[in-house]
Length: 397
Image (tube, rainbow, N blue to C red; front, top):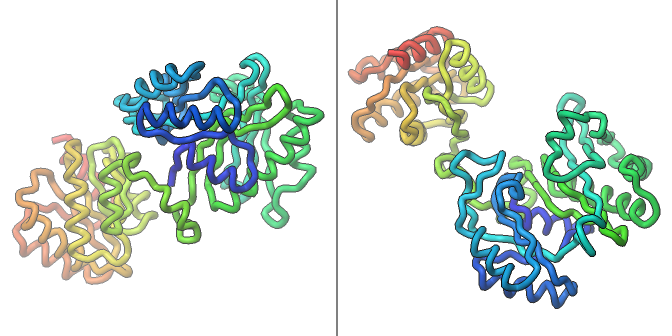
């Protein structure tokens, strides 16, 4: 689950990570009031006005502005709220900005007096260990740094048996070229950041940039946080931070019916039971020359009603030219799925795209018989590669 910057920073602050004082605003009037409160608390006479969307690269798209007066706070908030912000991490139509974060100025006395670093914590799946990835060259062009000067990207792997050790935090501060107050501050910062990562069951914490202010203080100037969905039952407070408006509405609807759905850019709808089989099905479609339009796992307890909802969700995508149903009957019964296909045809009305069905396993014969007797225009296949080939042929026709 993705979080907004202000939500991620609230988690960081709870673990002792230094973050700028900020307040969320939903309109220009609230933005000005927030700026006044920040000035009272910090004495800051400059403010950052930052668009809050689930995407990085907001600065490049014009979603981050530095205001030098309350009038500018109002002006920038008015410009940013309601805009469709396009960044390298959004679709071409961009994302609608519904709120902004107003923050104190931490680039004091000026940008030339601060240093920017990059830091993230994530799982190294190849080694089964968390790692801290960091660089002395943070900021908007970190991707360029990784491509052109990879030697400036450092990693520190964490042994899960003992966690982050003090010498590792000190090595990170040393590699960033810090000394004195800034060195001690960075050691504390890294330790608190790792505690936040593990304590919140995150799959990613990315801080870009980490700021060293003129007085040596270290701040998380930004935060990109992704929480492991499987751990949300342990964090009800974080689960409540979910912003459905930032997610694909089709995926949100699918979740209401217990369907694991991810929208893709192809033209072949997929309905499968089991994530592994879904991945294999998508691979076979690609190898046969097709292009999957979605990942959809109906789960191991799929009944006719859930299968019907899966059809409705797939058919909402106008790019879908064919649907491949690939069910292996282990826990789920193939006749239930077949009944769902028949019911979907009857309840939805005429379905104008071809459907290819492959049923194997529990009650597969009964399922095939149900479909055959229904009179529906459904193509059947026994082997997965045959089903994928049929789909591709149908789409080309």
